[in-house]
Amino acid sequence: MDWNFIIFSVVKIAIVIGVVQGMVAYAVLAERKISAWIQDRVGPNRAAPPFVKAIPGLGPFMIRLGLFQPLADGLKFMLKEDFTPAGVRKVYFWLAPAIAVIPSMLVIAVIPFGSQLGHQQMVIANLNVGILYTFGIVSLGVYGIVLAGYAANSKYPFLGGIRSSAQMISYEISMGMSVIPVFLIVGNLNLNQIIGWQAQHGWLVLYSPLSFIIFLVAAFAETNRLPFDLPEAETELVGGYHTEYSSMKFALFFLGEYSNMIASAGIMVTLFFGGWTLPFWGLGQSAGAFEGNTALLIGIAHILIFVVKMLLFMVLFIWVRWMFPRFRYDQLMDLGWRKFVPLALVNILVTAVVLWMMS
Amino acid sequence: MIVNRKPLTFWEKLYLPAIVGGFKVTIRHALRSLFGGKTVTMEYPEQKWAVPPDYRGAPYLVKDQDGNTKCVSCQLCEFVCPPKAIKIIPPGPAGQSADRSNAEKMPQEFEINMLRCIFCGLCQEVCPEEAIFLQKDYSLTGLSREEMIYDKEKLLALGGVHGGIQKWKQKLEEAKEQETFPVKV
Image: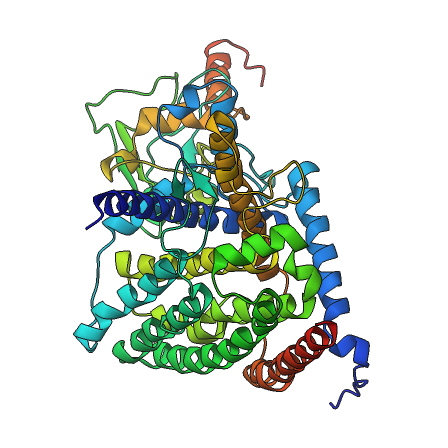
């Protein structure tokens, strides 16, 4: 038993989960603030612990930005009554929120969020089948939603569950097929190797832009974000699959949705935008190639680069939500099956032919 | 009615023009509200609506220009008040007399329960002394039900001064004129 490995893995897991939870909380704030700005509003600007107002200049500014709103939201979720309606199937009702959260957390395990700090690789699990594992886990995510819809024993969650199962299964196909050209080009499934290849040859979005576009759209559908938020369409289904949930169980669905966003942003950065690398200032190399303090600095810089790239994608996710109306159900299916699946197939074929001609 | 819709062109079917248009509109609004400060939100406790002149807010008692209580405890408002929000205790035969000369009485206690008041304005309409007016306050808050029952002192303090013809003062002057002979009026 390698104790060193276990201890460092536990530390990495704890830090990553903590960071992801914090990012989820502030992603909700960003969602509210960005939506407010787009809609000519102000957004949350009141919540503040009592001592903050006393800080001159900075205090009121932070309150105005709503930086303490997530704390208040979290506290509210904790203190709300956790109500279980009478007619629900209790086991599934309790199981569903957990199943909704866990896959998104598991996906984050294989995403390399930095090169190296000291001798530790900045990835929780450096799997050789990284992306296959991701797709395997992501497809579990639908069970949380379907179970929630089924267990609630109520019509709106039921409709939400049905929609979500159809939608997520449909888009998983185009999502899975969209990345095949990436692996044809790189010839490896390990995410770290993919990043290494991109550091040498340039970002994959330049080689296979169509893959990226299909993946991006499918990611919107997989995370149930507008314009594909049919499973929780507020205007049609009250709250969709989580209508009957309250308190922390509702918060878990929220957490699951936003961690999914973070995970898919991370995967997109890794697959198409060079992960933790930047093509200039010598940031393309792993920090292991340097010595002493430089290595440490570059390691930290890599983590920051990855986080910034990911945040840009999060902003895109949020921005798009406040831009488009929801697709109709038949349009959604049409787009998934009759546009993206053939497009992804053609993309695979063309990439394969081009690679064959070049070799 | 059947609307004739043009079939979409290939370019439009790609959704791309709509996506670019959406980005343009939203970024314009976001930048305007972020840096231009042009939001439609009214930040309530700091900014408030201008209340129109005939607004019916909370009813308060008023004083005349000499600082005297105008109410003479006739209890008309108490009787007319639809939700029975007003409670008046008159001074009684041996009670305290009014704080201005020639007026017979003033209320010993005058309470308005602001939780019951419906701001209908009947008290103002019925008052023969112009002693109670619906004023501009619309956000009355308190921590308990008791706190929301406004007593005479509070109502007078909130009501302020509302000058008028002061008919009791004129009656007093008329009476004084009667003392001398020949009567001038």
